[in-house]
Image 1 (cartoon, rainbow, N blue to C red):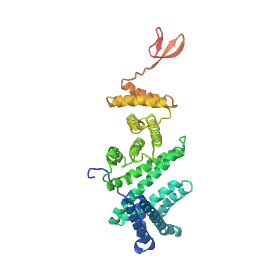
Image 2: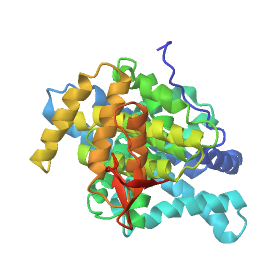
Image 3: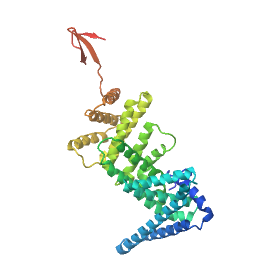
Image 4: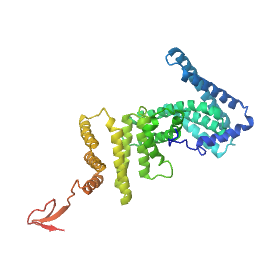
Length: 402
């Protein structure tokens, strides 16, 4: 693992670090408080049952079922103890009017999750478990309980990874119900990218650290290193789109089933729409060129990581057209030939879509610069007293008006 560039980020400024610092201070004078003892006891129980279930002989189905049921029951009781801890420690202070501004903010965040229960039960179920697990994990790190942390991290990674996958899967199902670019759909795309980013920043490094034999890192190394460049500083619109493109690329390995190809394709198309608009709306020539290069990179990513693996197509003709493009693309001798193929395919796809004249004109100018397409200007000519436009060669005996 020495050569890996993945790292566990500092959490000194995270929400969970702050709330656990506050709660720890509240409980420090009463370490033998019933809530603290209850959490410790329930945590120890779930760690023991998790270890027993994880190491059981897989061929003994009866024993495996018994241990799984015991583990799930102890896990539920453990989460309930943390939930009670929050209510008894923070909520009561807020209710009495003696809570700090941060404590008020913390309980607000907690109830934002609880309020999902009525209309978004699945998301509520996943996010509340994730919240409680993260809270206890940060509390252990703040108190420096290294021996417990090492055991707890095995449970934590296993559970939290499953919760992230559940959240992403839920978003994928909801995305299939949207037929137009409404506000809800835009928010849903944002939620998908935010959840992917949270997982890659906060869980993936720990997972690979705990599972040294996992070959996942080798598959995502290049993309992860690219992603790290976008984790520092404020991003502009182009960088934001490019970061989400990298997240989608990583998801094709990390969330193959939770974010299936159909949902991932919708996400790619959303990014392509935003990237194309950015090219058209950017007036600064240098920034416009950067946006264009990003579009080409996004289309390459879309083709290599998604369309090349697509099996089922709604229209057989679309599949045949793509096969011709893909064969030419894979046989292209250099990046310029690939770019030309991408531009030609882009122009063809934009022919049937409205309000894309400016983008098609820009693409054609790129082909002209590459010597592939000759852009012929229109000439105004005088013919029998009437003005008309003639493209290409001017007819004989017609006076050209310049």
